[in-house]
Length: 81
Image 1 (cartoon, rainbow, N blue to C red):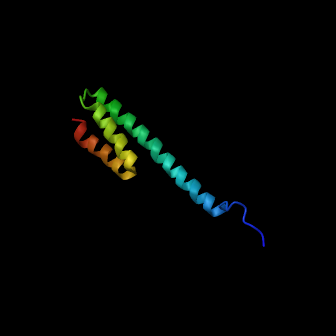
Image 2: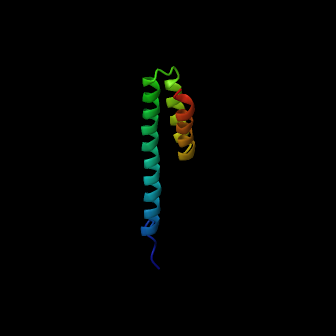
Image 3: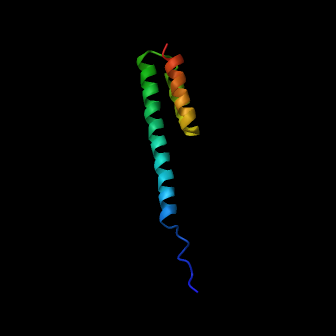
């Protein structure tokens, strides 16, 4: 009877873990890019709440992709006035 080697996951498990990490990295980078865009756009338009919009966007993407995109959509329709 042989002992398992430290119970290291095999090919399919590593692929799934790598895919999850890749999706998380893409959401993280998209969140940073959207935060930068919202903040710089609000600042360029002279919005006094540019920092608030940036923080809200970052928090939205911290929660998840859908809330982050929702904050950006709200900014486009409400905050760009």
